[in-house]
Length: 80
Image 1 (cartoon, one colour):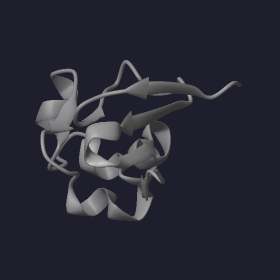
Image 2: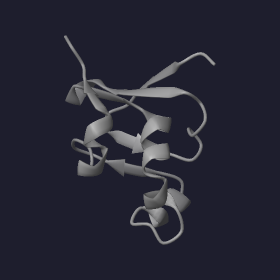
Image 3: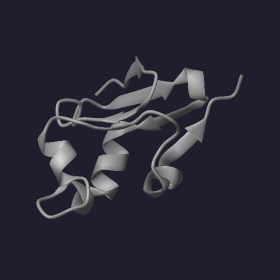
Image 4: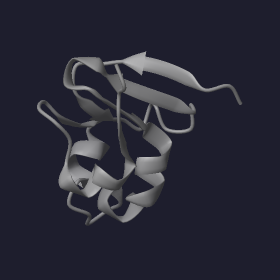
């Protein structure tokens, strides 16, 4: 499957993006990440009873500035 890219202004995870082999670039903040890699690694967080379940079940999990601490291992810096 070919990797697709999406440019956003914030950290964003969504069920509609899951399985799309999507790299999200947050260029204005200097980082990017593999959407599915984070969701797979944090699946308990997004499952029923998990700390992000409510947001996930409503269609997305996002953070305006930076990214959540638990995603740190999956974030890569954009090299300019």
